[in-house]
Length: 253
Image (cartoon, rainbow, N blue to C red; front, side):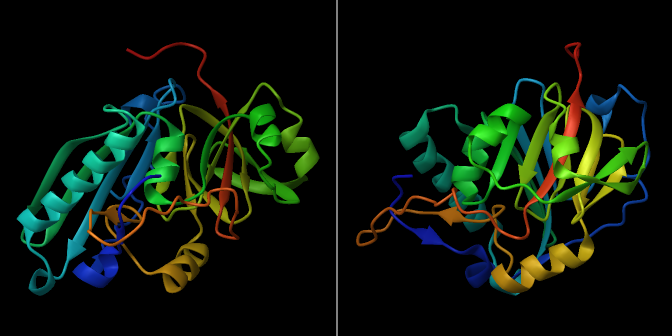
């Protein structure tokens, strides 16, 4: 993407991720009521249309941040991205920062916008399109039944269901899909029938390797002497986790 520079939020803001328990996340509101689930920890929600909503809960060290400055950084980074990719590519429906608690909601028009803006792997679409895109898949998946994922199956078996969709994420967020999860990669775990997350050990390893930044993975800002650098989204990481799901056939209201 044609941006003028990158500011890593971890270096500037000394962010400590607020990790809440999964007790409330683990409540299934109904087999077909995935759209009524409300996140209470940092999450990604994929809609039937393919748009992505990111909800961020963070605790910041107040001695290292200013709420107005942080809001300005976010607004500036979104403005720069939208200048290059389209006025409605990203929006910020909600932001608050009180007593060091940050609540931020960012809406992305497409999965590609989330991946490009945050410089991470992120894909959502049909299994066939995922295979054609060149994504590398794990050798085995775990079959999901309700809230449990135990039986290991070969990748070929999981990917043979061309009627299913797949989400691929390189993030420490929990991910909600618009339907029922059928398979997950072995570095992921089930939260409920439509939400999965990276396993704690995978999340901890990713944080040790990359540090924590805000927004999700990068805050962009203009400088006088920095050239834009496009994110290389073709290279996958060990931290990528996979969710194969059966999408809802009926539109939600």
